Amino acid sequence: MKIDPALHPWMTSPETVQVMTALGDARFVGGAVRNAMLGAPVADVDIAVPMRPEEVLARLKSHEIRAIPTGLEHGTVTALVAGKLFEITSLRRDVETDGRHAVIGFTEDWSEDAARRDFTINAMYAALDGEIFDYATGIEDLIAGRVRFMGDAKTRIAEDNLRILRLFRFHAWYGKGEIDADALRAAAEAKDKLKTLSGERVAKELLRLLEAGNPAPVLRVMAATGVLSEILPGALQLPRLERLAEIDADNFHARDGILRLAALLPDDAGVASQVADGLRLSNAERARLAALLGGETKIGSRLAVKEARALLYRIGPHRFRDRIMLQWAAAPRGANAIQWRMLLTMAENWQQPRFPLTGRDVMAAGIPEGPEVGKVLSSLENWWVDGDFAAGEGALRDRLAAIIAGRT
Image 1 (tube, rainbow, N blue to C red):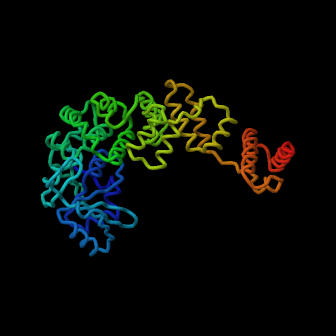
Image 2: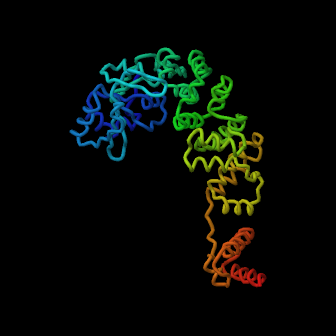
Image 3: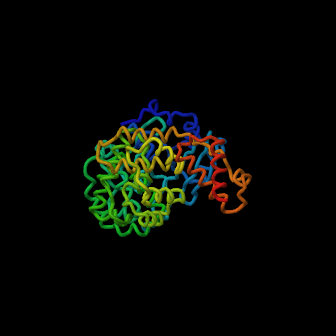
């Protein structure tokens, strides 16, 4: 089997050719090779070379390519050409592992480098002309949809406990049928080791798993083996997540890991906070998860247009869309799809009206500076929103005058 570079612009781009030419003996590796073989998009181009990182730096410099020493101790250098990044890693072998970190040594043996990689489908290399180098059963496993460890599953997991989650993530994306029995048994037996991993590493794998076409079947296996309860608390809502995945597919929506995580979790602000802490989510992700699961007023599919516009103004289109998607996923299959889509379209086309008055206007009308200014302004704005934004500046000033008159 060979990759046809003519079908993959990332292989023939001037930037790629420039970097590969500078390196000489170099091959594409990992996800770029796997996805190209499947005809799937390639986002990141990783390159492997049988030379130490110092030589990589020197070769790039001699060809006037900017080189960034992103991880020299791990043999990694990043090349930057015309805004495109290429991660270049020296061939490696494991010297010592403890389930979280590895001490590595460099090698010039491609098969030795392949042997330390996680799965057979990630241990394939390709030359610039598309020739594939497979040191195990990567090609046949990829075609068959088998996610298998390189070598003994227990040994590979013991080297890096994150591979427990990677097994499920890769099966959700590339697997067909049941998960490899040896791999599943090894992952289940080592599930308690997940607690030794950093929240950031767990979050990265979990969110990528959730972004698969339909992650629910794999998540059910994770739940049955006890793996899922090691990383997520509470009574999980797998049917709601599965429905959300169906809605995404039917409507060509981008797969959103945080939104899908919210669909999976119970509607409990305490659980949302616990998960955000455990996964070390960013402040923005934490706030979004809290808003989705915090028990705010539910949005029905038959929400009136006027009410929808008021809610869009108060919470913004992104939060509005999140709540719509979560409610749609919780609704019976096929119910009111047209209405849900209409509400999403409103959010996409929403133009925020500008409230004409400010605190200065309130003070100019006779309210002294202080907390009362904000209260009066908020009252005016609520009246304006409840009136579907119809009142102009003149009507608002009349309303302001009436409020002040009523206070005297």
